[in-house]
Amino acid sequence: MRRAPSIVISMFLATAVLAGCSRDGAPQLMNLSSGKRAPDEFAVLPGKPLEMPQDVAALPEPTPGGANRTDPTPHADAVAALGGNPARVARSGAVPGGDARLVSYASRHGVQGNIRETLFAEDVEYRRQNNGRLLERALNVNVYYRAYRDQSLDQHAELERWRRAGARNVGAPPRQVGE
Image 1 (cartoon, one colour):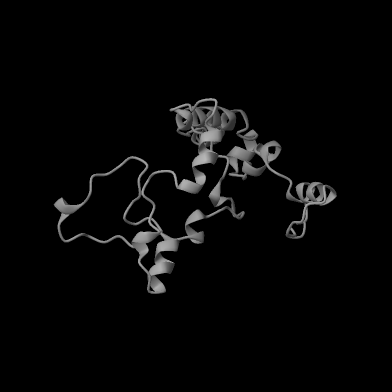
Image 2: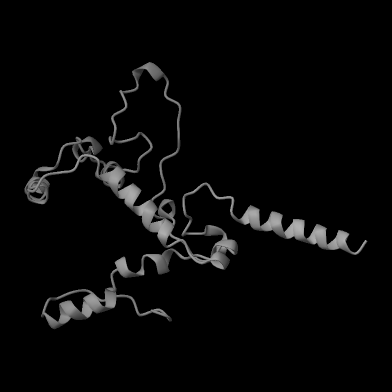
């Protein structure tokens, strides 16, 4: 009779441990349920509302990497609000004339066509290696900032470096506790 409670407790613990291991394989460094602040790109510039067109057949063909009807267009919206023609500031998809030299200089050694897929695979492997400790994963602790600490820019050190070089620059926000 005394073994029954210990068996039940052992089974419960085994189930809890196995449930903690049930991830889809992609490491989650940014645990949004952890209660810490996380970036929200949609709060910065919200998208336009979805709307159904009158004639679906009249829609243009989708272009990979092209603009979407609901993509924000702040410059065109500002021009329209001021009474101008928003089509004059719309991007045509080609590199703007002022940026052509910059793009050609950046691509002078060639361009890798599948760079996004390569970077994605390398980043998934990096996140697997820096996935946090066992209890951090079990308790959904946010380990994103610690994992990418070596790759982040210290804005205050850069500000001081530019000031010592004599460059005019704007100020940075004050240091936060723990920086």
